[in-house]
Length: 197
Image (cartoon, rainbow, N blue to C red):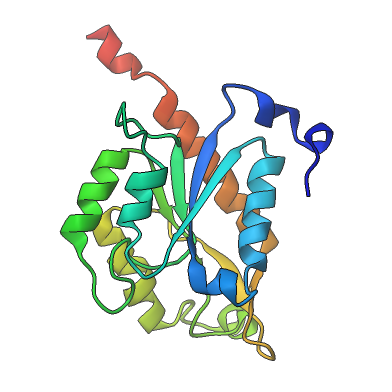
């Protein structure tokens, strides 16, 4: 538990970056959430506020619209979003609905990063592979989310060969969080070129 006096001072400021996180419910209810905790802690350590969301199934468009967008102003509460599911926004790996995902992301109108946990390989297998990511994972967790508008597919979590549970890859978590905050800062800047025209 973070006490008020322990919180990063930047978190208290009105200009703190706000990052939305899309989480997979199954990881939370099975206690396989250490990779999520690592991302939240890193974002907060970097001075960002975090709004985590999840869905009961594999359609995350509803929670995105319900919890990351102000229902009155229709403006986002967040400056960037990271999906930690590694899947398409609507439908997961089995059935994607790209038009619906694109519609939700257009309403959100902030940078959308799709980070991925290793699924088909353990961390050691991935690190020692000459191919990198397993080809099925590339198709399901890189190509399909890019059709929605996801960008910067960063592997942020590995998989333990004994337990099958995910674990954070800390240098990659740090990189992911830095990128999300910087994309959010860029989104908040005014377009100088447009002001010069």
